[in-house]
Length: 285
Image 1: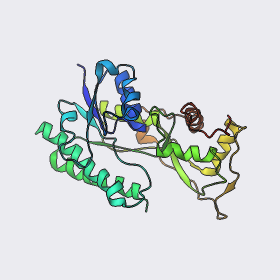
Image 2 (image 1 turned 90 degrees about the horizontal axis):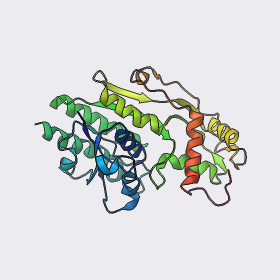
Image 3 (image 1 turned 180 degrees about the vertical axis):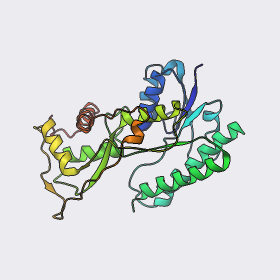
Image 4 (image 1 turned 135 degrees about the vertical axis):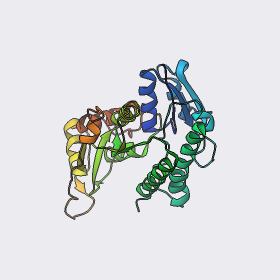
């Protein structure tokens, strides 16, 4: 029997790939976006294979209770992807925390009704904490997918925050940050959501990390892949490099995930940025 699922924030970086993979697997997808009339939000979704037959778009607002009722009605499952990811300029509470926490609860309430200084990290943590409390109190089956810094090719026409991380390095930056991050490919993140949904034994939290790498390693890979690029050779400070660490892949692999190599993710990210015409004119690959 053909299943119907909802994807929130469908126009975003990860969610766009999730919609693409769901349609490819034959799902009926009810997708929420903020503005149905903005081609930057919907055109790339409507162009996906299977969209004309099995994709329905709905307008929804994270902060508006009941806003997701129509898109969730009749669904067998919900993939809640929508959440702001940017540096808050004025009010972190209003720009990141409220949309993340209240938005998550609003989506869960809509689903439940059907049946019956890193501000970003803080917002996502609070949102997940509230989500686990809600599902425990209301006997809802939930799995949390916790991806690292997500890179890879863009489906949407606009630049996302994690894509900007790579873009800034190749668009004339004078230094690279003294930072170490866990990294993962966007296609693996989208695929993990589907595998978790389709596996009745999936439970709890799944951390998705292909590799932990300092920016100096990112620079090395970029230079090897694209030797013509003018890349920063100096670190932003003179302190010792922030050390790398390990994150277990075992639980994620239990879903059947085969991680995309970090080097391939970087290569596809840069090629996608070029395709989207986001590189400055002086940058040649």
